[in-house]
Length: 275
Image 1: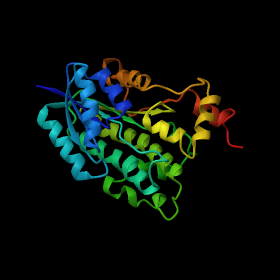
Image 2: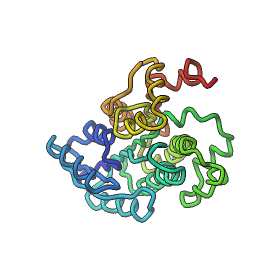
Image 3: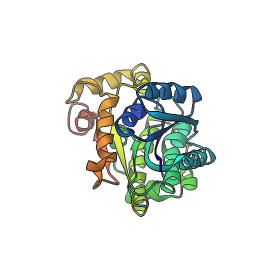
Image 4: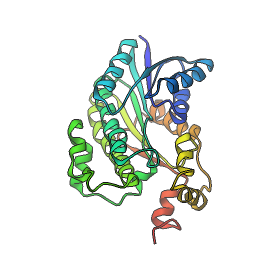
């Protein structure tokens, strides 16, 4: 039977992970924009991978369900790489919550219904989720376990009060890691695993949007004052994902891996700490 890796989000990080974990597997590469999926598929195909493409809107249950059905028709789904998302400089709070929070919960639910025995997934979250002060236990549980279609109706996500795109992004990313922890229980019943990676500033088109946007100065300061003193590369994220999705990671599930060059450490305990 054909083994299938599904990549949602045809950007630099999704491609880097796919290259590390998809040798000998069929790759279904999905993106909101058909031209992005096809451009990435061309690069991967020319590198020797067996790739097909699909269009998906992660904020639509019908669209995500259709993608899961398409992938299942190809073969057994053994890997899911969820790397789709929008940043605070790219979208409104409403869109951020729909794509980054609701969309991730939807992907986890739909693919948790079809993932194969021994399969694994990684969700690309963000260091931003680690810069949000602690929520209450009830808020944590609500983000982790509220039925997907009720998620955006939570009082804590009321758009009358949640007007800052950065806060919407932070709470979405915190929600991603909490949701993955809860979903790991359900995925485990199918013999599958799921983890989160929370990268810092990784040099991708999304990061360049931020570096050139209204928060650019803050981004440059994060790089300057971090322990690493540099941004990261998609290939470094790919290395962590390869561990999590591969045979050396079979004892790891429901976890969130922060890889940010020390930015979060500097935010809480160093020179980046809020005055």
